[in-house]
Length: 469
Image 1 (cartoon, rainbow, N blue to C red):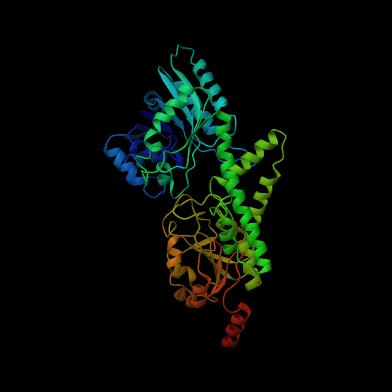
Image 2: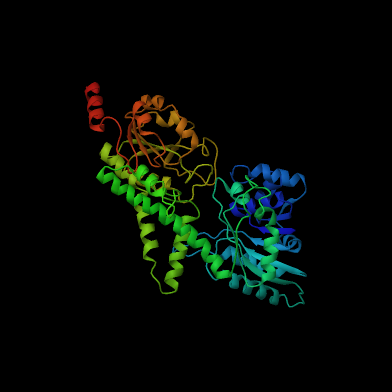
């Protein structure tokens, strides 16, 4: 099938490359000439495991092309994906100007045939009919006979950054929302190789469930899914904070409740809060939509409030062990909001940097995606001293905070890091490290909702003071 994908961010580029990989003829359109040139050379502009290899393989078989020419993409595609960004506005609602521009551009270039226009971007509920009106208005403005027909379908994405390629080929479900069965049937045919798990990790599993529904319900499914997961994280973080006060271990509590089939273990990892490009934006948008229709989403508002408090919990823990932070040096292990991505959008690290700097602390950081003379998805705040290794990070630090649970952070020689530090204190913001191993390495370990292991920091501090004297 001939496919056009407009927008080559995480969603658009992964979608286009993976559909080309399963056998479709795909043109990806973007208005950034430098970005298109990079992709035409076979390089991905974003870090996503496996994506570059998928792109290059599809390009070698002539199934994947990149262009800045929207007219060519619209003419080519039997299915046209809108996959541009919908960043949050200060009010919490989504900024849909890019979706509007693409919809208008599609209407300006429709000629003949039947097209399915797909909202792949996360858009406000009701956007399907809105996009249809914009396309029709753009067609009417041309004042010429246009024989093309089209339908709009909502096909929300459920990709996780860091495993987006895997998620494309191994989805939990595919949601197709529309008002015309003909459009839904075309989308089902498009996804047939994925539904039948031809490219799945386990091809013997049952076919992927396909949810056929109306436009508004499909749009709501996306928001509701992310809002639920965010709320689940905020819940276990609340439990962790209670565990801190009563001496319980939230990791064991999470295991105990996660074994309940009604609850499940996923998204029950307590830490310093959720971030990224999806959860904050989507929860805020759903709250804003509720307000627009006269409903106050108190549970969702509480989840956001709990998360905002959780993101600076590490500051409180640092103050408990170090006292005044002015003049102290704090090292951040990780900057991205999750591992296997270079995305720093709305990461807890940014909150920590702001608050630590305001309190007069010097902030150092190490992240595998952000080493010296390199930039990932966005630039590192100027308040941060970027280091090239964990060892350089630890040098003369008064404490380190694990922000991102990169796999390699479990394998560090923490004993060697400890001897480089002014005081070997570790705040494990993801409950990712083993408390006993950290204590054996010489650290005073503090988790989130976990009893501290080993000797008290007061005793360690007393020893350091006596030695200094």
